[in-house]
Length: 480
Image (cartoon, rainbow, N blue to C red; front, side, top):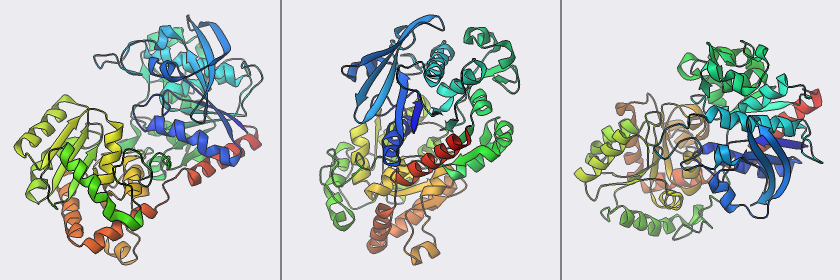
């Protein structure tokens, strides 16, 4: 089976979050199930810098007003189609934000162009290759199936994956003429959304199947609390909605071989984590004692519950714990966390910024990772924590609920617990969870049991890739 995947991020070339990890790992995992994937992504400077010996496969003299070229290249096991359109993508800043942290005003055109190019490839414009199915990711690629429906091209089976429904690609109605869609596409059953243009909404209306990145999140987005205004549209697609939990690349995330980890280890050699723990203490200037080290590796935003972390930091120290934070985000939250580190030298350490190697070392050296997200479609950091014996302390929501087994009495007795869940997502709820963690940590045998059970968890892509392959096959066999 041939699949065209369309994504605005693909690890290891360009990443701002979990979308990139999925877009990079899933195609490789699908190979075992006979699925051949080509992934179309934008030619950002970071992408163009690392690809080697690309082959020109397609040219667009006028892709929504700009010239563009499709380059094909192999990179770390991925078969990539890179949309080289300098007018859209060769600019400073990140994939979506300028150097000042503001949205590029033409983001609608930049990602409509990506979608339009994808729809042309889906129609067979790429010489010698045409997919059997199209898989789009999030709002940035969601217009692909809109173009496939409204352009006079054969319609292929399609899947849209929602990684975070909070990001919808909603723009003013004045951009509609620039999309070069027929007038009747601006309708309730098309891309019109309360008088605006909705990229994700259009994708929801035109894709044959919709997936979320965890089963619980598939249920949650049917509610006003989590549906972010699209719960009504989702409800109309409920028979075509599937929750498939993400996996991780267990070759990249492997404490037995990870090149960043100072001392490698496995479930039988957990004592080797101690050297990594000392490295964490040194990096964050912590006191060298036996107190548990709680870590946070996250975007510092309200959604991720980082305001709660900032508010309880003093109490974590008062309970006898230590806290280290790696991440960046809202200036007020960065300032609050840095202030807590100033109040508690040796007990709290904060590093502002993105540091992929340090994120690996923190998982390998810290005792527990706190993930207090108010909503979390899937989450990957808890999967890394399970893999590395860094016990997850998570809010009971979305994929966090699906992947971490709470250490309640029954789960502990059955020796299946892998972490600690808490609800509601409040200061009180989090502190109760941390108190439980402190209690478990004091019983070294029990804590080691939690670590080992977590490390036994299957966090790979194998089962999830099998489910995607089955979904693909069902759609292709139905001819839809």
